[in-house]
Length: 127
Image (tube, rainbow, N blue to C red):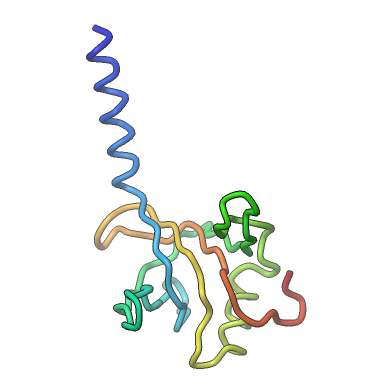
C-alpha cells in the first residue's frame, strides 16, 4: 500500500511539472491578449520567435539576484503591470525587454501566467 501511495504522489508531481513550463527570452511585441518573444538561443545564436497567449490574471514582476544562488528570482510587482511593461518595451525599441516566463497548459492552450523582467533600462514610474 505504501508503494502505491508513493507512486501516486510521484505521478501527480510529474503531471504538474509537465503542465507548467518556463522560458527565458526577449519580448519583442505585446498585443491585446498575447506576447511575442524570442527564446534565448545557444551561445551566439538567435532563438526562435514564439507567441503565447496571456492568462487573464498575468503577474508582472521585477527580478533581483539571490546572493546565495547568484540567480535571478522574483522580486516586487512591476509598477502598472502590463501597461508599464508596454511602456518599457516601447522605450527599448528593437532591443526588446529581457524576461522569464512561466506558463500553464500545452500547445494551443498554453498561457503565460507570470512574467519576470530580467534586464533593461528602467522607465519613469517603474520600480
